[in-house]
Image (cartoon, rainbow, N blue to C red; front, side, top):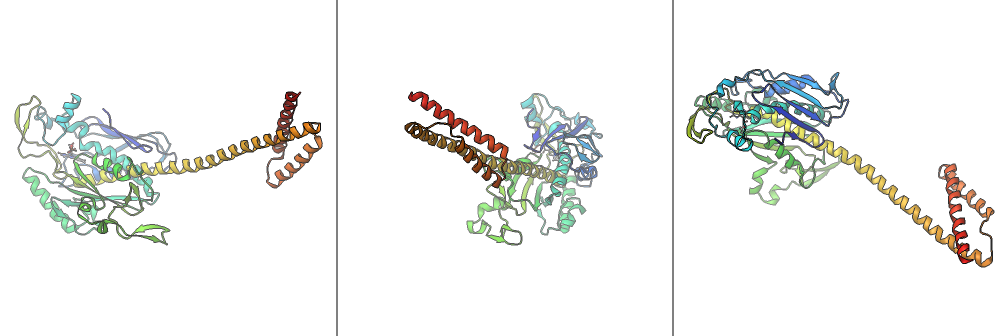
Length: 450
Ligand SMILES: Cc1cc2nc3c(=O)[nH]c(=O)nc-3n(C[C@H](O)[C@H](O)[C@H](O)COP(=O)(O)O)c2cc1C
């Protein structure tokens, strides 16, 4: 099965299934000597962990992270970092009853049709549990970005049509929905619990904000920053829509309303925009303003309410998905979305640093190549003059070898070498080689004319 890796320079590969022994991640491309805060990784996993509140599944996983490699004395060694999170509370029996039925909205049918084999217990590889691995890797990316002053955070902006009207960052981690508006959060929670009681589920919108991103992340064609961020976020289960900046709203505006007026901010020493309708990205490249993204989170598919389906043999059936499921995934998607955005940014940041290094090196080498080329052009020009001198000497019947002339040239060249702080021994050897070339050229000319 392909597609278990993400990123180009800072790469992750996740592994494991919902009801297997563990889920985990291998991070490749980490520089040695960077600090790794295991407690921070654990805190991030705790934010995604099931069983946190009334609006999330009651599956009780401690989600303790174990770092198997790549870290020594809380510092990266530069070798792959492998992190594992053991599954402890699988309760696979709940799936026995419905193992021959496809659950609407889940990957069961498509997965089985594609691979011919599927782990029916809790969605296997397609489960939301896989995202624990992303959060562990994302925590590493987040702390490396934070060292450069870049911060990624997300929150639940809307649940089942209830919108947050204020953004109080301090409120996000205080309520069960991770909503930045306390009043809206209370209404959301009520609605989620009521829906759960009725055997149903609700969806919502999660907004991700990146504070202080550098200018220049992203490439202008296929690897546009928003294209990679869209892939990162759309790869999370249950995400059905992606927007950057004004997003779909831009389709309803005039150019004059949607453009962000520009100005030069002397204090910041760079071009800035008065508004941020573009969401911090122009032409696929970050412009230094906050990056603002939104994703649509569908209502979870596992619901108690009876639904029409078919068995794996194609027979009509009715299904009611019992067990421990999230009635609204938004609060658990928040840390996963932050992780995926952090991983994407760190990958692009690493690419950007490599590009800068390469460009500088390549530019200097290009100039060296031009200088080397010019040295040969000058040598060819000198040879042409040597031949002219050879003809004149022949006409006058003059000797080829003129030690006083060589002495005179050498003295001049050594004086120039001293002025230019060039190595005198080298210049002496170079002049001797040039004199030798001139002499042999003129000797050949004489032989030819005899
Ligand atoms: C953190 C997290 C938790 C999830 N929990 C549930 C859940 O309890 N019940 C459910 O039906 N889907 C849940 N999902 C969503 C399913 O994994 C997803 O809908 C399913 O694999 C089908 O994929 P798709 O919705 O992307 O098409 C969760 C997703 C995430 C990211």
